[in-house]
Picture: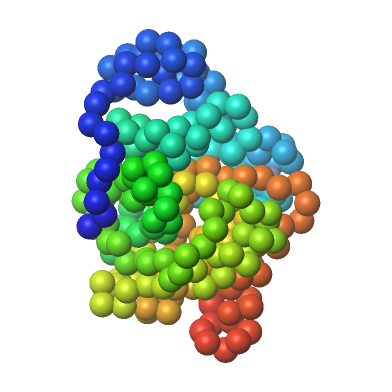
Length: 247
Ligand SMILES: [Zn+2]
Ligand SMILES: [Zn+2]
């Protein structure tokens, strides 16, 4: 199980503006209103509904994210998740994800891409792991730390899109033993930026025999240019090491 470093306290301040909040709600009334607007089913870039959004390939169309990483409020929420996550916010986000998993809540387990060791040291927690654990507690689905980082990699946020894809290529490996018998797996991450992390995790999970990987992220970054989200997968598939089933 992932180790929880998250601080134990109930915040009484809004994570966006610092105003007083109602107990257990991490946002004040005004910011909560702005936050709720993020859930409107339209892409802020192409103005289409999520399932027709052209700003991020298949993932955007799947709609498996809570909100677009686009407005100041959404960026602030993600910043807090990355740098100052506490149990209350992790629970709040996990609850929203749980409610969003409409079609099916049946998974054999929940997994997440582990945060780089140097980042855990810096911030004190693994944000995707913490959200996954909260979600696991709500859904009764076991959270397994089945994905490992293979080698030291640079912090993704410091890199360009192309560098990110290269950096993440072969970054993860999965634990076959822990994933034994797990066919349908929910993959939780904080932000879908280029899709490189999700794709690399999917490839690692499939290598361990997982048949269906359902990625769900807190936020999704829309892109205006035509995205190339499949590069990582295609290059590994082309090498013949494993095949990735595409819809
Ligand atoms: Zn506020
Ligand atoms: Zn769009």
